[in-house]
Length: 466
Image (cartoon, rainbow, N blue to C red; front, side, top):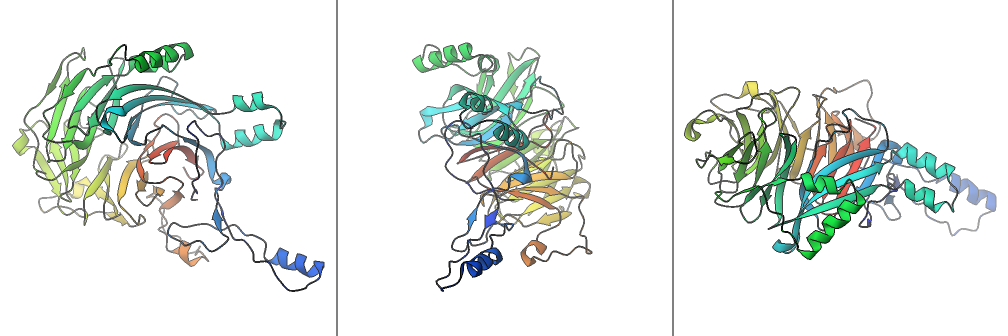
């Protein structure tokens, strides 16, 4: 079910928007009796219809959200838009489905001026489910403003000044400390310790003192380490999950560098020799294998996907290549965390391709499945953290799609709607309402919860499909 966007205030918005396309009926100029008018009104009663992206709206039609299609839906603004964000692991428990929810994010801004950008360490709390919101609204009187305020979502933010726009940000936990890596448009990769900011967003007094300190410029927060060895800015960035403290960064000149940190996180070593068989084409995304600490995947503007073994010397490290994997630049890849033989990729051609690494060979590979739902470049894609057949994708067409590869065509149930019949059966859900979608992530500790960022802000939601 799509969402129609509207202006959202800077603070988190409590009420989710509604999402059903309605048709308005035309008024009659004929002189008819009241009974006849009522009969016509009944016949032409507004009927909700499913809206598919790309359809033209008729005069009098509008889009609203179908709240029944969402278990949870909230919106947030961060000031300057964020190109990239990551979910910060927390100690609130795994597989938590008790509402209201809390979660932690780190995001990087894309402000108009390089010197006013920030990393934003955020705590979003009091995230109620749609059912809770409905029940609370029904039980509260119209003048109970204090009670209503108690149900509003809360967002606490601790900023860190960042030189240049943040192209990409990724976080990890290492030695009990939360670290973030950020790619700057100025060609630098920074490592940050987020502990002070995480402490500040837990306490109102601490947060006020921290923000006052930042505003006055009493103390400049510096990164733990900065690498300036890339020959240009970049976007590829990923922490290894099976070898904590290992990072890969890739730039727009086709160079990939591998980082490692010692056990004290005080000393960083970056291999100055780059993995560069994509050169001179940009490395757009990097993904470490979910179960092999020395295996890395990359995708590029050169339309290829490469698999690397970082134990080998850089000139011999590229082990597998899928040439011409897309018909245009490949923007994003995601490695299936549960079934590690599968990758999904998305490109400027709007295609989503599913790859079985067991079919990669000396002559390249062919995708085992291809989907053309997006009508503009795919900008983000990610497998579900626990459901091996489920993934989500987002693109410049302002769509976020949820997919389930286990769904097969059911020829016994054919849709009466010709447009709906054209959709692939694996397509579970289409979420809209954001403009220029940049990145999405499933929350690994809150089942089914998705967070997405776009030029229009953040969405936090869970659909009835996953």
